[in-house]
Image (tube, rainbow, N blue to C red; front, side, top):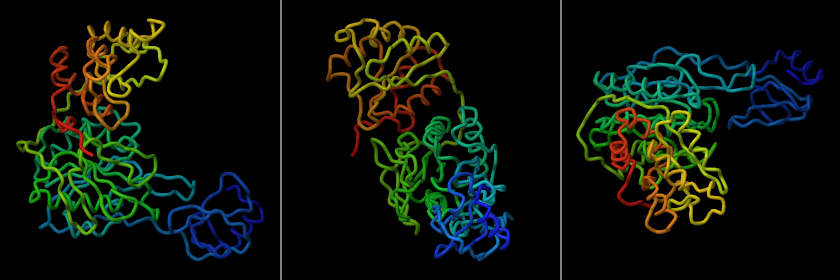
Length: 432
């Protein structure tokens, strides 16, 4: 550690190591290691989970570092609804490493559920599955295929529902992928994450898991099913939202209520006590089948003012089979009639490319829906071959396109499937 020799001498004399509970001046917390900064400032992790620096030589040891959480298997009530938890990694599966000061993975998946005794009163977690351990930003379509097949296996074995824990960075991508790979799934598949690590006072992971458990326990009586996310609905520990996997988006880097339902109401609101308000119900036949065919060579392009449309040709030359473009406004891109340099016309390039690979428009604005009938530039883009995807989120669109192309490469069939509502990704009209 890089504390000053004076501070190191006090810590050594009192047998204090990172992770010890100490008092520095009037502040109490856990000693954190120090990699840089003023060596005379002692860094504490407060009960709230936040760090603070204290300049004082008055240092008192209060307790040894906490022992690792007992990871022995928790005993659940077999009379309660059977649930499997699929653990993949991420912040919800992490804690602070007091040797480095960074966040590290929990050593045993049972540590996650073992820290939340409330779960025993709600569901019977009879299986904890770890198909792989990876931070979510490193996921790819093969991981989604593994998850879909594992969910199919668990639901066919009689589970009332499945909880999947992963990192929040791409939680909404996973929810979208599973929505298509588990078509019309007749039981709840709940993707859960945490914006704060489990040993922070402000961690949201426990409540998210509790709410997900309440949802699965009551899903049959409330007729709730399908793939969705269960995350904090507000900054306080009051309630969570179960949001459809094709209508959810992460809209903040760190807030606990980062995940919002876009262009549609959430499916349900779940309070910590177990009260559930249902806002939407799906009308489809029950099914438990993993359909994991996927074409990974799909591109998502976000134009900026003055951007060169040759980027589209780049993807086509690289063998990409389909393209999603985040269009401006209601569905506009730089068009033939307005650009001075015709090489900068996006509609001109789309006109040529759309004969080889399908080109689709999603909204760059996130909220709202596209409409090709308002501005002439949008009409021009549509005439050039761009297919408008109404209120479908661009992230969902690129996932859906990969799934559709995994089933057919026939141009007209691809277009038909993309504008067909398969998993709640397109709504007839946008709701506030």
